[in-house]
Figure 1 (cartoon, one colour):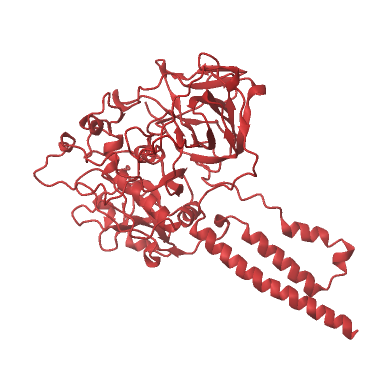
Figure 2 (cartoon, one colour; figure 1 turned 90 degrees about the horizontal axis):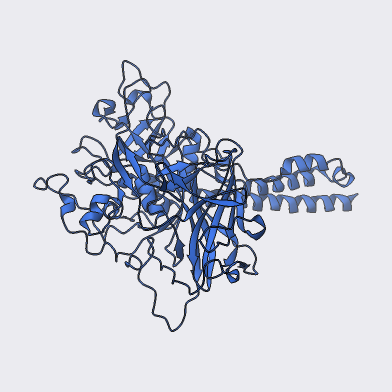
Length: 592
């Protein structure tokens, strides 16, 4: 089964809906008070208002510089060698997360996250070796770390809270000539695989398939690195200039995952190897962090032409992406049905309108728990979303009656990929089972959602879903709930999660340490089983805390901060100009 994630639309949210101060000033000039104002004073006020508009404009509305190299600014961690293993997909993903952490002030450039922990957490063969039965997860291609992987594997690892771990806790196994490829999983897993603490908590991932040069630059400035794939064939590579180019007319294919971390618009096109006598038409290249050194034949940082025909083009399970949100690890309750993120994308095929989607996951909530956030995966950038709570009946099926729904949050999907949203107000849920629902309305294209299900590739298992859950995912149509199935009638689970907090009872023992077997996948405590009857009327009310809405909780980017400082300095100068103009005006009036 093939799934193509390619999107030609911009991965970024529309420019913030800031009323045009320019238009307001022009219109208001008709007002007599404005017409009677001295021109110097009017110009100063106009300038200060325009500065305010600039300060609230998103970072990507500004023109990016002609070149950017985070190495010169100390804003990037060291490049690393994946050694003999086919682990580029893990190294590229970790490079992007490290880059996000440094760019956004979560860590300095010495940060080093563990790639070794990844395969043990998500690959079927590794879980079998670790004694997990029944084993589930990704098969990679042949089930070993020596074979290539997929971007979806790393994305699922991040969003499922199974990592990241620190390299100092779980160091990378480099192997040696005496260790046959593929035999590694016959060894004992790292002893601290479960007990090692998570270093960060990833909240958002933006898909960047088909993004323009300017959009990728904006993403790098805001998020750090952008993961994509290239053709790292040596006949396409110039070792003297560390330059790689695969033209669209070449018979190339993606065979290596990389992380774009910078650019240079003036990088000479002559630095690339001519293909069939042709060079790129224009100068300019991406600065790429590389992990495949090919025994020293390829540099740890290479340049790839803007006109490369492979990068930023998605293959099945290989979206180009950036970490769009991460933060320190929090102690939160986690309600999730999927184990490894989205392995497929779906829409409601039974609905007459594919631009609308309504679905729900049924979860069990504990006494005293308050929901604070929801997370979902969709490729429907720009769609309007609503997060709701529905009660369930005795069969644990959502009661899809709009009059009994409670709206928890709504907004616009800022980017394709994974989005975590804060609820408008913390919701105090009734103990017991209930449904968290997502409504999506797309203005263009289908309304989609990511799902976790069994996936085959060329007749062989590619991904085996965790069999621990019965049917808990439902489509909501016309006031009724229908179990989510795919052919041949296998249940699927939607990537729609709920996060919350729970009041601690003083007499109870402390929380398990992150990574403990009794915790949720992201290292946080599971919910206690409430003593109640599902579907009971006492479980149908939802109370929201009486407090002002919370801030969005997203970490401000270094680019945002820099532009804000510039705007504030400009505003201060203009404010001085306003004061001077007023003083001059008063003095003039006195002389007259």
